[in-house]
Amino acid sequence: MSMAEYHGKVKNIQDTPFGYTLSVIGGKWKMVIMYLLAENPPVRFNELKRQIGAITYRTLSSQLKELEADGMVERKEYPQVPPKVEYRLTAKAERLLPVLEGLCEWGAQHQDPSIISIMNTATD
Image 1 (tube, helix red, strand yellow):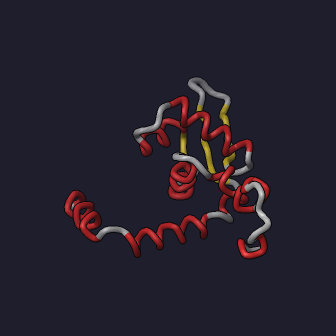
Image 2 (image 1 turned 180 degrees about the vertical axis):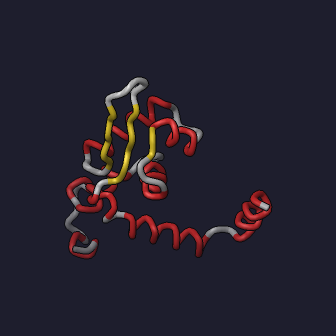
Image 3 (image 1 turned 45 degrees about the vertical axis):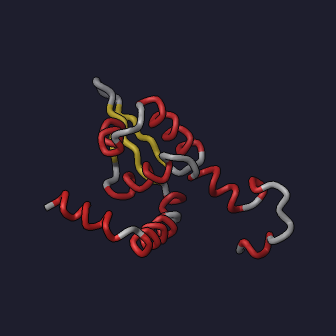
């Protein structure tokens, strides 16, 4: 199914597959969370918070709950003290990883070269 099939027929973007996809992964943090969960599964809540940095605990919790409700993230709680909770991507979310890879490739092709040299200098 492609966007062309909806050309001229869309009254409400939410009624399209594109709209559904945006509702699941849209927003400031969801793709960041998915990227980090894809990199090092499973990931504990505080580790996600450390890796993201600029996100509040409340926002991270909310975004994880939304991703879990949409079937993108699996939450596993271990019965111990202190509580241990791990998150990982579901098979449904893993099918989106090629799309995220495509976004990374697009970024690599179009990113300002001066930013790349600054990043390389910072890691040396």
